[in-house]
Image 1: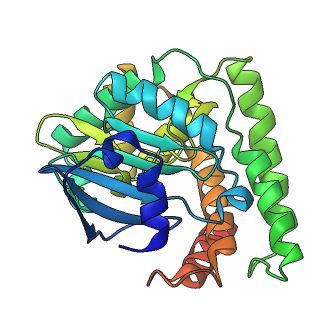
Image 2: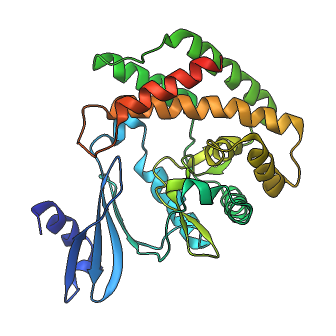
Length: 286
């Protein structure tokens, strides 16, 4: 057991009092490192907070509050410990598995995903908002400081981003709900009944259509419409348009995330390739 994990355990009463703790490697995690824990026979997951949290716009207090709220209604793992300011986290291990991208588009799965998103969006408000628009600005500035840039002209992308921001401001008229803000297929865990959400790092008060567009990011048009029907009861033209707008915002947010991840710890993920692919798709949609 390395010194960092020992130091984390020293701050968690349940770990200090445990008779036996087994630490095993666990796959996954782009921003952080994960370990599987067996504490006196009970299985947990340790997330070691990554050092790139600040530049990526992660607010650990906001994450903690959202995660505790979501775990309280059973759509997120039970929290054993959340250590600030680093964001080290221990949650109870949940049986289930992440759906494949093909499985994620099946009607029964979409229905359960929509139900989970409705429950999240109905949670009481927490302190702290999520703005993909400001995140993109901060990340581009940080990228410039590091000598990094997108492979396509950024000004037309920003112009489109700000057009969408103004449009959504008028539609929302100040309304915000608690959002996960990263609900891609790999952040869901399916136990056959409930679709639970993992990785609440970017959670905060925001635009529910950002969540919906993230869920449906790789969906064809008919599946996007079906998600809206399951979530809203209908797929109105204005809501279809909102999904298309927020597809662009989600793409911009994710491509700047990948841009800043380049040159960091080697996770085996092709961040540079993601930057090229997503930038090209965004340029095509201008």
